[in-house]
Image 1 (cartoon, rainbow, N blue to C red):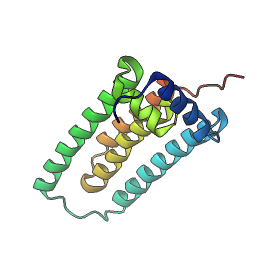
Image 2: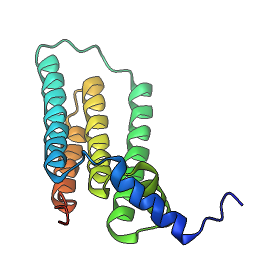
Image 3: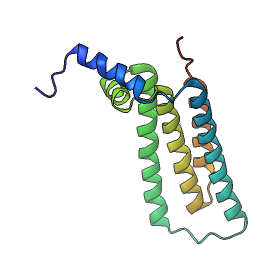
Image 4: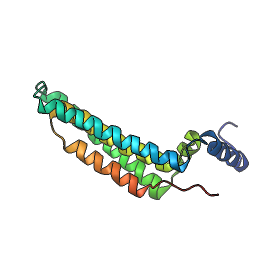
Length: 153
């Protein structure tokens, strides 16, 4: 049956996953982390400059309320996934790791980036930087909690 795979099959998939992204060495992961942080800071700065030039249109209340709801759902999803990767290690996290073939640390950094980039979008529409700053803090925390793993030689 399709869903009934043996343990040997799972091990071979896990071994293939490490070969799948062989270029993703610890040095490259450090570079990826720097790019994620750099892009997040750049786009946040771009929105800040945009607002400092008084170039923003007025924000409609209904849209902002809906955007806040999307933000709350995004934050809940990302935080639950980060807790799952770090502490719970559920089957969902394991399947995602096997399917994507990238380290948990990179997945966690992308969840942190997702929160910061939602904050940039919210900041762009509302001139409220709190969501962006909170997302930026979570992104930096993911860099600390999920460090670059050194390869085993």
